[in-house]
Structures are given as C-alpha cells and as structure tokens.
Image 1 (cartoon, rainbow, N blue to C red):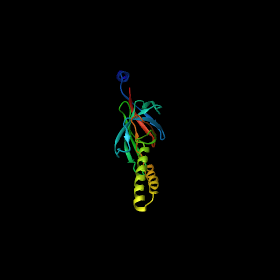
Image 2: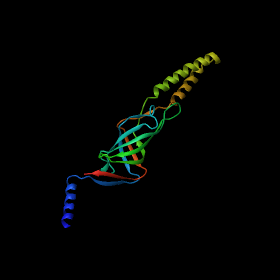
Image 3: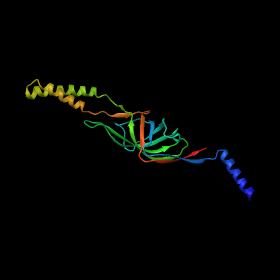
Image 4: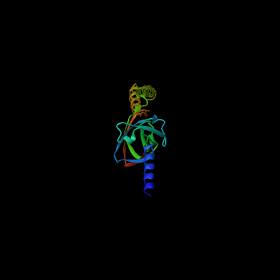
Amino acid sequence: MKTLHIAAATLALGVFATGMVVAQSVTLPQGTTINATMDNAINTATAYEGQKFTMHVTQPYPSSALRGAYITGHVLSVTHARQGVKPELQLALDRLVLHDGSTVDISAQVTSMQQNKSENNTGHTALTAVGGMILGNMIGKTIFHTNIGGIAGLAGGALVGANAKVNFTVPAGAAIQAQLIHGVVIRRQAK
C-alpha cells in the first residue's frame, strides 16, 4: 500500500514539474484603478449604442496578472453634437481577458479619457457671422430701410455659430483610466 502512495505522489510531482496547469486566483478590490489604451477610435459623430471596442491594459498594473491583458466593452450611450447640444460618450467595460485567455466579467467606470476635437468651430462661426450680416443687411434695407440690419445680422450669426457644438474623437492609442465599481476575483491558469 505504501508503494502505491509513493508512486502516486511521484507521478503527481512529475506531472507538476513538467508543466501541469494549476489554477491561481488574484483579487482586485473595488476602487482598483486600471490604465489602458484604446485599440479602436470612437467618434461621437458616428458612434452608436452597442458599438464594440477593445483596449489593452497598460502600466502601472494593479497586479502582475494584468500584464498583457485587454478589456472588451461597448458604447453605453452617445450624444451627437449639434446646435446647442454638447457631445457626450459613455463607455461600458464588460470583460477582462488575461494573456492566457482567462476571462472575468467586470464592472468599471471610465474616470478619464483622452479626446481630440473632431473639427474646428472657428470657420463655422465666421461663416455664420458673415451669412448673418448679409441676411441682416438685406432685411434691414428692404423691410426697415435702415443700414443697421447688417450689424444686427453679424451679431446674431456670430452667436449662432458660437453656439454650434463640436464632436470629438477618442483616438486609437488614447489613454483611458477606469476604476472598478465592484471587486473581482480572477482565476487564471499558470504553468
């Protein structure tokens, strides 16, 4: 009987030494900050709810288990820029995928996100101001028989142009910082 136990122990040790996969777990508590970079560009002009994206976890890692990991997510909500409406973008982070393929569902909120304005509003403001001046001048001279319409139109056009909001892009490679809303236990495979 002793020989059987010794043989079983030797076999188990031999399998372990040759690379048997052993499960390990890592706990990331609530409030853990995760840094990442976007793999896909997202523009508020064209983004849609449910649009998928990925981002790769970057240093400093809250745990060495996140080295080589990436996060999958989707656009939770988007507001496209328009006259008087600022663009907004909310991202949902869904899943953490470790370099060994292990996955865990996560609940995290984006706390900072690098953005680039999609367009310059100065040209639009100038064009609406000039258009307002021309229209105001025509109305002023035709209807009211005065020269003040051009000035009023210029001011009105400038206000309309300045109130036009501009979309933004979260470019590929943009720095993202997220914080875990709930802690997670990651069970990963290690050799």
